[in-house]
Amino acid sequence: MMMMMEHVWTQLGPAIATIVFVWTMYQNYFPHEIRGHIKRYTDKISSYFNPYMQIIFHEYETDGWYERSKAYVAIERYLSKNSSTQAKRLKANVVKDGQSLVLTMDDHEEVTDEYKAEKVWWISSQQVANKQTISWYPREDEKRYFKLKFHRKNRELMTDSYLKYVLDEGKAISVRERQRKLHTNNTGDGGYRRRMWSQVVFEHPSTFDTLAMDPNKKQEIMDDLETFSKSKEYYAKVGKAWKRGYLLHGPPGTGKSSMIAAMANFLHYDVYDLELTAVKDNTELRKLLIDTTSKSIIVIEDIDCSLDLTGQREKKKDEKEEEKDEKDVIKEKVKKLGAEKKQSEVTLSGLLNFIDGLWSAIGGERLIVFTTNFVEKLDPALIRRGRMDKHIELSYCCFESFKVLAKNYLDVESHDHFPEIRRLLEETNMTPADVAENLMPKSSKENADICLERLIKALETAKEEARLKAEEEERAKVEKEKEEKEKEKEKEKEAKNSEPLADELKENGKLESNGVKENGDASEV
Ligand SMILES: Nc1ncnc2c1ncn2[C@@H]1O[C@H](COP(=O)(O)OP(=O)(O)OP(=O)(O)O)[C@@H](O)[C@H]1O
Ligand SMILES: [Mg+2]
Image 1 (tube, rainbow, N blue to C red):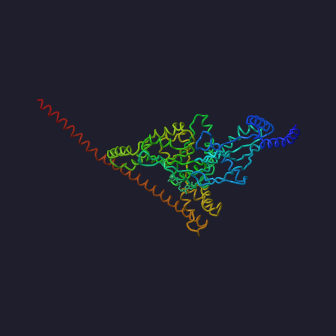
Image 2: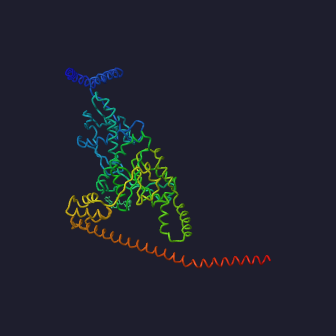
Image 3: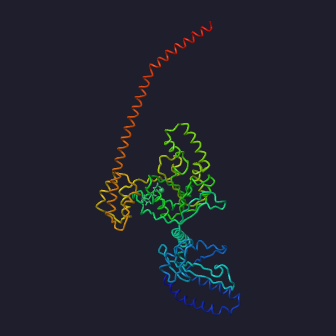
């Protein structure tokens, strides 16, 4: 059967080609109506024998003015992947607001693609309008389009899944290659035209490769992020806003801010660095958050110090003021509360409202990341799961983290010094920031040996300091206990000394009351 079809096609093909050729040459000699009829039939015949189908994607939609069709842009991006290797003539476009070049195929070039082992052809083409007018807009006289050609038998595969795949992939490439921004909220009142966020290009070099932490934990976080970014349908299904909260906690210099940058680089998200102390009230907070775009990380650093969200900030101050007169403390507290209220009226409940539900109205994927040095001091309401879905502790440098840093800073994967460093790291606490600082060569003459030896020395010093500090603390504790005991003893002594006095007073009291009685009696008399 196949053979027969092929035979017929080889016979008919040239014949049809001849008819079409003759027709194009002589069509002008036929009257208009007849021409229309004949064209319809020739189209029908050629489509009957032509086993290929085609779909056209115009650059500008008919009803759009200047906006390029989203499908066209996505296809252009998708094809740029193949066209740079296949097409002979390429066009270079500078991406808007970016510095990267996108190479796309030039007009009338053709590239092939394969999907589930089926071949398709993409042809870039343009129609030149035949009217003789000068136009303001390029779209008026050149109408570019992509033509997708595929075999008829693949019609369903192409329209149902290939096209969706191309559009998604094209969009993903655009997101990956777009220039990302770091947004910071503006302080002060700059009039009503004040922009809520100001932007700079985000080019933080931190990635998960350069981040020093336990590899298993790192992988877990990367998996979590990836699952989140691919779970649009899932979130819609379970009726949750597409957002995820992370709480990063740990001592200073353990990589919290570095991890946020790594997350942004990993997911290709923008970063919104929200400085809560600069936000006037809940209304402004709402405006700021609504003004964020999809595919972004909203960061609130040092949540414990940002605001009096938890009451902790004041407690910290109170601790220092323990010795002061209680009345003074209360007075100061009232004064401070007044001052803080004037400064910022963002409340914990306002913040929680946004984190919880309001975003579902905006849609789009957002991560919210909080960092703190003191997780135990945060209000449990703020960090419960569902608000802060994942708690990540970043801690002192372990041997695994050190290995990442050594590879990154010195290009060293193993060394004679490693066992000693491992032992020292187990015995003492040093932040990755300090380890990194010691590993970094300070001049071109410093090689890995020198840097590792410096780290060993620093670790030994840190260990010694920690030992001395512990001893000091122990001594202070013992002294304090001793003092307290002495105080107690003194109190007891005082109490004892005052006993006879009390007896005496009692005695006097009796006498006095007797006296009164007597007096009273006397007065009555
Ligand atoms: N885990 C880490 N991996 C790689 N580099 C790190 C790590 N932790 C710290 N560093 C280095 O130390 C510097 C300071 O770290 P970072 O700002 O991320 O700390 P942090 O936890 O945010 O501290 P803080 O609590 O003071 O804000 C970084 O620029 C980075 O070079
Ligand atoms: Mg930080």
